[in-house]
Image 1: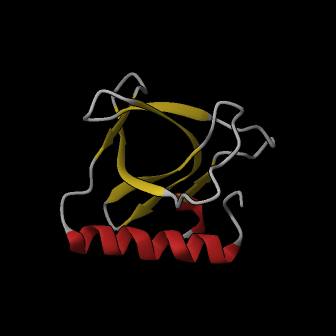
Image 2: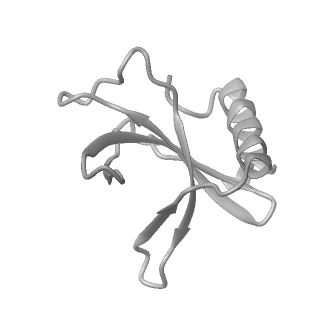
Length: 103
């Protein structure tokens, strides 16, 4: 994974949050930690946050596939296989080790 394929979201020290609509109808607010590539796919790491925007202490980052529509609208999708998830998780761990994401 080349460094130019990692897109830290907090370059200007601002938190970017999204709201996920879960399958059970509930909403989950998350801070975007990083968008990164593994092979020919992009992934996004999200951290669940409370109403004040503070990360929950007992939560780990959530990983999803990431893409963009032609107009730039984001597409977030579940990672389908365990093998793909393990590759995305290993790459995210390496990014964290390099200190590129927010802690």
